[in-house]
Amino acid sequence: MTLEKDGVDGTAIYLYGEGWDYAEVERNRVGVNASQLNLGGTGVGSFNDRLREGIMGGSPFGDPRVQGVLTGLYFAPNGFIDQGSESSQRSRVMEDTEKVMAAMAGNLKDYTFTNRWGNDVSGTNAAWEGSNVAYAQAPRETVNYVSAHDNETLFDGITLRSAPHVPVSVRCRLNRVAVAVVALSQGVPFFHAGDEILRSKSLDRDSYNSGDWFNRLDFTGDTHNFGIGLPGREKNGDRYPFIAGLLADTSLRPSKDEILLSTAHMKEVLQIRRSSPLFRLRTTDEVQKRVTFYNTGPDQTPGVIVMGISDDSATTSTPSIDPHFARIVVCVNVTGECVTVSEAKLARDLADAELTLHPLQ
Image (cartoon, rainbow, N blue to C red; front, side):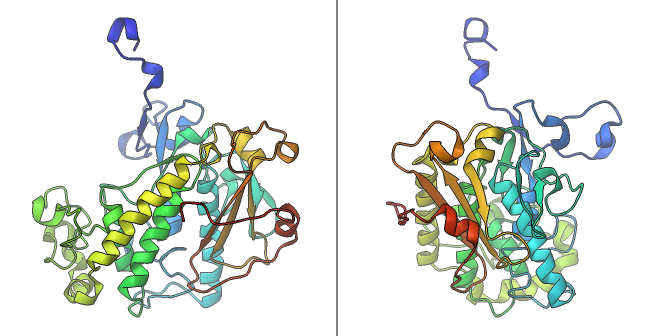
């Protein structure tokens, strides 16, 4: 499309899609398809479900109570299903953390970082050898998200997975952490309508035909859609035995204060992202030279991700692009506890850094 012919500059249009490899086109059975693994190098974006699965746990086709890095695996097991021993859950948390780290670096197949075993691996081998976790060749080809129009909302997904003893205030905080991870990652951030207001569809996994009753959005925060009834039987009937009790628990419905706090938080992290081009790097080479992960290897503190982004031309061999910030450090802590991270690489890289909270915080 051109300005002369169409009145639109096609080069300025961003194209993205779901990129799933399934049904009759699976594994290129009818020709090379536009799936995730084939889109690298095209400039076309695709949804990064690896981040969603690492953060939330499980998959859209399994038990919705399977936990992930954010939702309590190892740190607050829900006891609803058998998720293995404590040691196996710890191992899975570290494995899923690598998926999240890869996503935060733009889900680039050739980006290398130190894995939980202390080995340098490429994004395509994050979590395990041959995983194909990362597949993009440029950050713009990755659409990072944790919730979308399909399946449960972010708040509902957290509610399904959280341990019974986890109060609604903590569930709301987890919602905000998930939003922040998406907002502060390399690549293209994608948010489901209502992530910022803790949107609920009363645990409906497919609200396409559920009408306004379940799909309602109230941006004032005066009302909230959790616990307004059992969602349709056709798509949710097999879940009634375990979702009915959750929906009847009025203590799980967020207050207006929590909703407004989450809305303000969404605005804050988006402003932080906008405040520095370091959050919007354009190439794999830039990301490799500027983005570093700490708290890695076998001695890492599980549940804590520390990502550094540098604008130091001397150490990155790249020109400075940010007149305001020389270095950015993003810390993600899902443990529920205050944590001190001690690591030689971290101490070396930040030895002379005078870190403060972002001016917007």
